[in-house]
Structure formats: C-alpha cells, structure tokens
Length: 443
Ligand SMILES: [Zn+2]
Image (cartoon, rainbow, N blue to C red; front, top):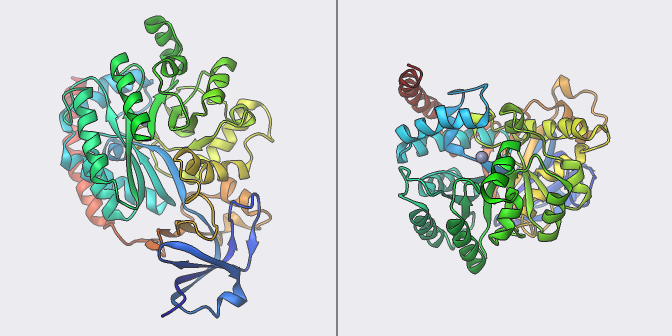
C-alpha cells in the first residue's frame, strides 16, 4: 500500500499560509482527497505513491475560488455588449432568458462555462442561476467544488412561478445534496429590487434556521442605491440589514457606490464582499473600494460574474484587474498589491464560504484543491517575484493542472471530465438560435 495517491514536485509552492511566502524545491503529497504532506523535494522523491508528477517551471498554489458566476449565461457571451446594466438586462438578457432558458440551455451553457473555469484555474465556484439542479449535475460530473445559491425572485420564470416556489425547489435541492462532499446549496435572492420585503424576510428566517449561505447582488450601481432610497427609504445595505439578511453568512456581490456609513454597517454585521472588477468595468457600474474595505478588515473575495458581462471566466485576469483598478480607485500604487489579490482569490473566498478550515491554502489536512501554473513563457522572464509574475504578467493560459479533492480534472492542459469539441458544437447550435432571436428584438 503506497503512502500517497499522488506526489507533486513543482519548482515552487505558494501556500498562501504562511502569508506572502514562496517555498522553493518543496513537494506536496496527496492522499484520500487531502493534502497529506509538504516536504523538501529530496525527501519527497522517496515517498511511495501511485503517481509522482514533476511540474518543471511550475508554481503550485491553492485552486482559485470564484465567488460569483451565472455559469449557463456563457451561451449569451457577446449576445449584447456596450450597454448600461438596466438596458442590457431589460432589452436583451431578460427577454432572451424568457425565450431560451430550459434544462438543455442550462446544461450546455454550464458545461461550456465549467470548461473555461477549469482551464483557468477555478476549482470552487459559486453559481446563481435558474434550474440549479441541472447546474449541480453538471458540476458533479465535472468534478468541481461548488456552492449553488438557488435564485429567488418574485417574477415568474421558466424555473418557478414565484419566490415561494423558488424557495421550495431550492430547499428540495439542498436536501438532495445534504451529504455531498463537494456541492453545497444556499440561497440566492437576486437583489433587493427583485424581491418583495416579505420574500427577503422569509429568506432571512430560513437561512438563519438552516445556517445556510446567502448570496445577493447589492449596490451594483449608483442608480440601484438612489432608487432604493426613493422606493423604500433606505440604502440597499441598510434595507438588507433591516430585513435581517446581513450577517457572516451573507455574500454581497458588487458593492459599488459605498459610503462610510455603508462600510461601518458591513463591519458591524460581518458580511462578506464579492468584487467582480471586470463585470463592473464593462457595464460601467462603478467602483468597489477594495482597499478601504480591507483596511476595515471586511473580507473581500473575487468573482467573474457571468460570461455575458465579462466576457471571460478567467480568474487570473480578475486578479490583475482587481489590483490595477484598486490602485486607481485609491490613488495609491501600494493599494491592493499582488499578494492581496492572491489572498482574495483563495483564502478570502474560502472565508466567505465559511470553509477556511478546509480550503484556500496549501496546508496539511486541507482539501487537495490545487493548481499548477507554468511560468516558463518569455513573458514571465526574468522571474524576480512570483506573486508579481502571477498577477501582473499572466495571460490566463498558465494553468496546466488542476486537482479537486485530489482528482486531476485538468492534466497537462487537457480537460479530463469534459469534452471541449462536443461543447463547441453545442454552443454553435445555440448561437444560431440566439442570433435569429436577436433580430426579432431589434426589428
Ligand atoms: Zn451577477
């Protein structure tokens, strides 16, 4: 019986804990889905294992945690661009969803997204979209780790009649995945403007009773904040707090147009912020004050949002943008530095999920969710500083291997659980239908 299932021999390990360190010539042993040893390479070469994998010129680090996505919207990548949020939603996205969202659309869109995510180093995904039961099946087959926050909105959709049916269907899914070791189910109330006060309060009550995570779009734009004040007499963050929905289980996505008072409220209630820099920039939504949030010890994680508003699901790209616009927003080149964004995409994501004991760092006893990044490209030379290379010089194609719970889901840049040519064919089939429909919207 070998001591380990797999032993990985990268040139460097970026463990994230201890903070801001790079281990040179260390190896990592995996067993039963966990990290079982971290040892000097010479010692680890002698370990008995089913497989020893040499990762020359590679850095090994925790898998990236993408805290906000609508995976199936990959099929709407490029469907409508260069529009402000509400025009984009009301004129194009919502009508297209009304027309096309079905279990088949969700399956094909989700699998396309998962391929993009896995090849880009995401090993844990938080998703929020219709037919989460279909998304769950796709994630399970792909071997990824996920939190599915089932959508709750008052309007009738292809998935549910109203908020109550959303909740009933979502809770049935939560029951179904209760004992699953990689997939969890929580609440995804869309926003404070898509749900009635009663529906928000019901979500708050149930989430507390079940100790379940909640993810909500909040303060996405300045208009959302102004409209909220006009409609209910409170800023969205205060309104959420008044409904009992702001707390350490809550992941607040976007968080632009924040004042000092809003940040005080977030600190008091211990809610998490999910920053989606590229989506905010593309939709012209506004800036999330990441540096000021971090200075107040508010946990800030990172997400891509859906491919319809990004248009990639490339977490390395989000790391780079988060750092660059963090400096611009704060008018300080020291703000949101390379190590900070590496933490946002790993351990901070794990904290937002309440899973920091299991995910987010390379430490013995944690889940073997790892990625290897090839830094041999000329654009990485010379490698003065690995954190700088990963954040400022990567183009998103560096990921060569990904493991989730010890299983290799990407080997040498090859997807192991999804077939990319089949996914491409299915995406082309949907593209034809969507193009014909778009013409009817514009005439
Ligand atoms: Zn979103």
